Each structure stands twice: as C-alpha cells, then as structure tokens.
Length: 337
Ligand SMILES: NC(=O)c1ccc[n+]([C@@H]2O[C@H](COP(=O)([O-])OP(=O)(O)OC[C@H]3O[C@@H](n4cnc5c(N)ncnc54)[C@H](O)[C@@H]3O)[C@@H](O)[C@H]2O)c1
Image 1 (cartoon, rainbow, N blue to C red):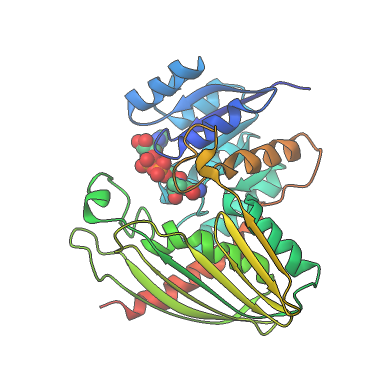
Image 2 (cartoon, rainbow, N blue to C red; image 1 turned 45 degrees about the horizontal axis):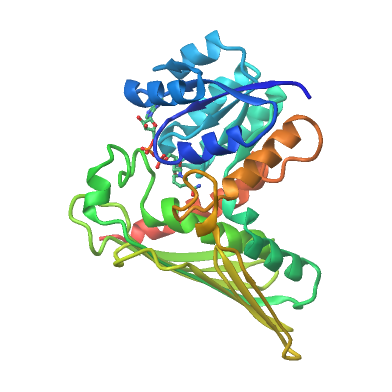
C-alpha cells in the first residue's frame, strides 16, 4: 500500500480527533502540523515526529503532501482548501464548508477542476444509530416519512465564547448555535429525508448571551419536495449538553434517535433498539460529545483517495446541508432584534 503523507492545519480542540484517526490508519503518516499559535503546532509536531509550521502556504509549498486536514475557524475553510486544491493536494475539511454558500460552491467546482478529492466532516452520519435509521428508511420498511423534528439543548455560556477569538462572531464563525452545534442534527435529518427543501421558515434570537451577538436560539420549519415537514428547535442556553433527539413519524412506524441511541417502533408493534456507547471508546478525544465517528469517516476518505470506493461525503454532497443552513440564516437573521 502506498504511504500517504498528510498534514493538519489548525491544532485546536477538534484536531485531536483527526490526529487519532490518522494514527489509526495503516500507511497514512502525519508529516507536518500548522497553527498560527506556535506552541500548538510544535506540540503536535513533537508528539507525532512531524514538522511544525506557522503558515499553511509555506507548509504546502515545502512538503510533498497527499492530503491536508482542515480544522480551522469557519471563514478560513474554503480559502485554505482552494490553496491546497491548486497544488494538487486532497482535502478533508471540518464542517461547515464556510460561512456563505458561494465560497463553498466555488470550492467544489475548483476541486473538480484540479482533480482532487474534497471531503467534509459530518461524522454523525457514521454513528450506528444514524446508519440503522437511514437503512430502515431507505429500504422502505417504515414507509414514507411524514414529519421529522429535532431538538438540541446544549450549553455554551459566555465563558465558552470568551476563550475564543472567532467563536460567536458573524464574520469568522458565521453564526452561533445553528452553524456550530445544530448543524449535525439538521444534517442527519436532511440526509435521511433525502429530498430538496422547497419552503423554509426560521426565526433566530440571542436570548441569553452578553458578550456575543450571534443567535443562541433558533426554530424553524423545512418543507421538502417529497412532502416531509421538518421542524427544529435548538438553543445553547441550557445547563448541560442534553442528548439531541430526532423523531421521525412515518407511514408504517416511528423513530426516536440521537447520536448514540435509536428506537424504532413498527406499526405491528415490533421494536428495534440500538445503543452505541462512545463513552467507552478507546480513541483519544472521543469522550467529548463528538464521539469517535471521525475515525470511520476519515478512514472512508482515505479509501476513496486510494480509489477503493466513492467518497461518501464529498463537497457536492455536503453542499446540500450547507445550502439549507445558509437559507436558515438568510431568513432567520432578519428576525433577530
Ligand atoms: N465535527 C465536530 O463535531 C466538530 C467539533 C468541534 C469543532 N469542529 C469544527 O472544527 C473546526 C475547528 O474548531 P475547534 O473547536 O478545533 O477550534 P479551535 O479554535 O480550538 O482551533 C482552531 C485552531 O486554528 C488555528 N488557526 C487560526 N487561524 C489559523 C491560520 N490562518 N493558520 C493556521 N492555524 C490557524 C488557531 O490558532 C486554533 O489553534 C471548526 O470548523 C469547528 O466547527 C467540529
């Protein structure tokens, strides 16, 4: 198997999951780590016997890289990805694609033109619960979905935002609870419903924060071409991160699921239940709310890069949820006082 040389840009919180995923893969080697904060780049470089850089451009010029992992503030995602594409380097980038739709669409086109693979992290699709529900809906066992709903009540107090120079800002993060936290549950519903949103309504508010002005609460209704009505509610003024809950009301049964659990009740009374306890995961960093599904998605990215399969969450695929999230902002921002 050809040895692949890879690098990471952005050595903050989520980088641990990318580094753990790279370490778990045979013949994928981290050769460089970049962060504008020298201590972060150097700490990763030391741990993985790689070279440290402060500039991603310099790193891409100096190293012969097969791929980079982008774990940066949102507004930098497509800028750095596009630089890599033009040098023939494949990219796996954290969600969201960017803070607007146009940059994301341009990046997808550019990756195609440059003949490189462009993957976007949506690791929740790789959880056993989400996979089971997707399979049972796609196989027709539950009949058509009639309605869907999702709820997220998490905690991101002012102290959380005070620690970051980009989170909670419109120009660098692109929003608050929707683009950063609820994006995963919105993505799961959008993926499972698998239809085009035709009517979207949304309201947003900042109800509980004093030092940031992005939305900390949002609710809305998405009406899909196939008739599904999806309502969502999210807020990050709660006292802890409660498990997210997604409900699907279908013709021949109903589903309740989250990141780790799924309960499916069919019309004849039969039940299917699944519990996937990531808190016992051995993967470094996996005990945080994001679980260890990065490992699965990143392995899939490298299999696609080796030509063994199609990339599941390509830029083109990720654009579907990105378009919906951007639409929610277009409408929701107008409702903020
Ligand atoms: N998939 C998930 O569940 C999940 C969870 C958390 C974060 N994320 C995503 O990961 C990304 C990073 O989030 P985070 O929480 O790790 O943020 P973070 O602030 O902890 O880390 C970002 C890092 O990027 C560095 N950086 C900033 N500008 C840079 C530049 N020009 N060049 C090099 N380095 C630069 C910062 O110094 C920082 O170390 C975001 O897109 C976020 O939404 C995803």
